[in-house]
Image (cartoon, rainbow, N blue to C red; front, side):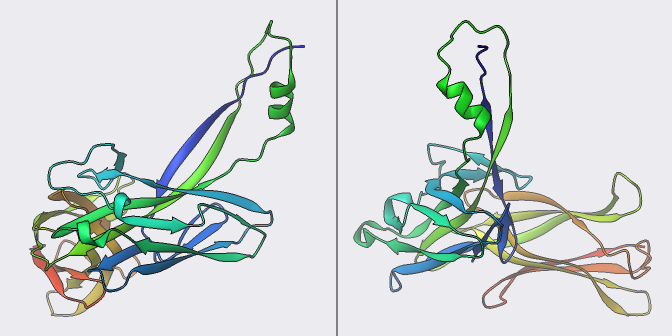
Length: 278
């Protein structure tokens, strides 16, 4: 009997939607925030929208955000960064959902007396447990170690994560929008607004980007909206490209673009900027 070896690859995915999904798992909300210590329990709802029963394991992970918005796993906090993991407890840690079944996850704030002024952030990771296939079982059960061939099977294991944030004290965070310009997409058919988000202060920034085009005649049209846009502390710079609406036949070589970045909850303006297109 030939020995068969199975190699599994895991994909770690993070999203920016009100309800986030990966595979057949829906998660709501996409972000948990403890503002102070008055409310000590939050809830996350998981829903299986697939046709098969699925099992997910939960764990906390620590990440840093790159200037391009990418997430990179880390083990040691950077200067100015605090992990939330020591101050949060969640249950259950493993969940099995039948098709169309939902269940809540409880996240509890603990050790509040140890929290000092500032922001604490970790990411709750939901990982799908891969079912063993017949081929994998055959590889496990084989007793012949004189392999004559090597079979490599790529088995993607999907997961997603949501930010869990604790904030203590008042926010001093400010944002500036700089380096605005119009670029073309690789296909040459889409206009992209390129700009830099510059964050300063003691907290991450998180909110909604809105872009309006104002014609030479003063007509205003909404050409882009992005919800859940984050600049995670301690990072101070995030470079972004925003796809502009091409369904309204707008001439992006004339007029101007007005950009606003506001908080989600209270609609407080972080920053605004204008790009003249003429």
